[in-house]
Structures are given as structure tokens and as C-alpha cells.
Amino acid sequence: MSRFDQYFLMREEDIAPYLAEKMPAYFPEGAKLEVKEIGDGNLNYVYRAVDPVSQRSIIVKQAGISLRISEEMKLSTDRNRIEAEILELQGQLAEGLVPKVYSYDTTMAALTMEDLSDYSMMRYAMMRHEMYPNFADQMTTFLVNTLLESSDVVMEHKAKKELVKRFINPELCEISEDLVLTEPVDDFNGRNSLYPGTEDFVQRELYNDKALKLEMAKLKFKFMNEAQSLIHGDLHTGSIFVKPERTVVFDPEFAFYGPMGYDIGNVIANLWFAWGNGFACDKTEFCQWIEETVVAVIDGFCAKFKQRFAEKATDRMAKTEGFCDWYLGEILADTAGYTGTELLRRTVGMAKNKDLTTVQEADKRVAFEKRNIRLGKAYILQRGEMRQGSDFLSLFRDCQA
Ligand code: SR1
Ligand code: MG
Image (cartoon, helix red, strand yellow):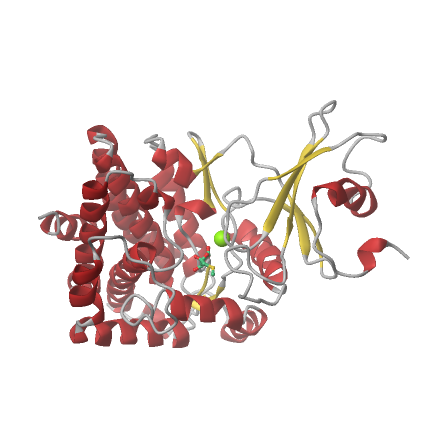
């Protein structure tokens, strides 16, 4: 009988005995581990354990039954199982671009994985206005490999449906259905918080705009009903680690079978948040790099997608002449739509981005928020017109005023 045979929420002092029991061979015998809680997300607890002598280290991530961001929000701890399983799958599809998982413990809802503390979380790297020239190339490889290769274009259809079943994720999807795809235009839970000076603008541009609400409803139903690919489901810059030579995507607990454009759109929107922070801090070169990166992510995705489609498509009808271009066009429209929803929800919703909230001067913060809202709306309303990276950039420039 062990104290880890029944679930409880661990604290720092529980991690060394937990690892001694569950991962006895990982550290040298007699190692005295130093443990620190380093979680930065809204949901879970993340511990880093280091043996200062051998310098070996590991991450333990545990799901709580209520969320860090709100005690009232309860969630099944099964999300950690989903995370462990998808990381293994993504590791096969996009080798080296996700952390290695060592173990998953269903009782404690805890997984152990590779420690990437020598990387920076991309959000903080962006807030320091650092530039990562390999990011677009590695991110587009991750996106194309994980999204295209988990879709019906490539997979045998019954095997794909098995994955749809295995990664059904109703509770975390509900969070996104509400926070991302409803509350920006309809604050029915009363959870939005508006920065002083933006209230009338938000009322007019978001809550009273019927055309926007209709398009948001379409995007919501696509999110709920289009089991296109095994998506990460929360691909913001807080789910990405970077160092100059390598990009690693983590934290896929929101994963489920949904539209590819949701992941790509999340990346693009969070790049625009980084731009907004850079702009508020007068970082011209950094902003220029972000603009180039947005274009490179879209164009790189399209080029790699077409190439891999030609190499890997197995479905007879998917190989029909013209289908790949049509399919990619739909993905780009979805990408623009979900870029828009992410821009809006991270500006007015309960889970805001630090790139935005750390801007102290009121006039700059208001300008940042209004630009996000104009841009988010434009991406949603004009999503059918996006053909390439330069279209995403032109729309962004049109919304500067
Ligand atoms: C209630 S959880 C708020 C947000 O944190 C996660 O990272 C997701 O983005 C979610 O929408
Ligand atoms: Mg997260």
C-alpha cells in the first residue's frame, strides 16, 4: 500500500517521494532532489525536480480537480491522460518537436516528462522581443505533420475514427466553446473584463454586431462538428518552448478531433499579440520579424502541406485533381476565422494574454485592444478572402488605423 494509490493534489514536498516510488531508476541512488513548482498555465501544477549532483532533472505535471485560474471551475483529470497519449502520437508524427513523455499515472493524474528548462517559454521570449529565425520552419513542420497525417486524407478511415473516439475531450472543448467561440460576442457568463476606456467600443463592435455574431456561430459549429484532424487545441505561445535551434510544442491537453485552422489560427493570433507588445515598447525590428514570421508560417504551411499531400494522401477521392487546392483554401479560411476568435477572446475574455496585460500606459493598452478587436473582426468577416501569407499581412496593415 502506498500513499500514491489514491489521488490527492501533490505539493512540492510530495514530488521526491513520488519519483522515488514511480521512477526509481531515473536518478542516481541517494539523490537529494530539489523541487520547485513552475506552472504558469491556468489549469495544472508543474514541478521541476533536479538532482544538483548529477544535474539530471525531470518534470512532473499533475492535473487538479479544480482549475488554478478559478476554484469554481471543476474539470475531469482525464485531460492529463489525453495529454500523455497525444504527446506520444505527436512525437511519432513530428519527431523532436514535442517533449518526451516518460510515464503516465492514471491514479494521480500525473505525467513525467523531459525537462526543457534550457528553453524559454515563447510568450516570455516574445515579451523580451527576442527573434527566432527557425521558428516558422519548425512550427510549419509540426503543423503539417500532426494535422495532415492525422486526417482522413492520409489515415485509414476506421483507424482515424478510433482516434476520434480516444481523444473525445468534452470538458475542455466546452471551455473553448464558451470562452473562445461565444463570450467575445455574448458575455452570458459575465466573465469578460473590459479595460477602462474600451467599454463603448466593445459594446458597439462586439456585443451589438449581428453580422459578427452570425460568423462566430458558424465558426463555433465548425469547431464542434468538423472532426478533421487531431488538433493541439490550445496552441498559443504559452504552449511553445523556443531556443534558437529548436521549437517544442507542449501542453496539448485541449486536444481533440477538430478543424486544422484552429491550431494555425492560434499561432497567428498569438504572433500578433507579440507584435502588439513590441509596438507598445517601440521594438521596430522585432515587429518586422513578427510580420515576416506570420507570412512565413502561412506560406510555409501551404507549401509543405501541398508537398506532403502529394506524397502521403491515400484516400482515392482526396487525390482528385483540384481537391488539395480546394481543401487548403478551406483550411486558410478557417485559419483566418480562428485567428480572429483568439484575438478577440484574449483581449476581452477571462484568459487574457500577458503580452497585452503587461502594457502599463493606458493609451497604449487601449490602442492595443482596439487594434486587436478591429483585426479579429476583419479576419472573421473576411476569412474567405485569404489565399496566402501576404493576405494575412495586408489585412493586418488595413486595421492599423
Ligand atoms: C479556464 S482555462 C482558460 C484558458 O486557459 C487555457 O490555456 C485555455 O486557453 C483556456 O481557454
Ligand atoms: Mg495550457
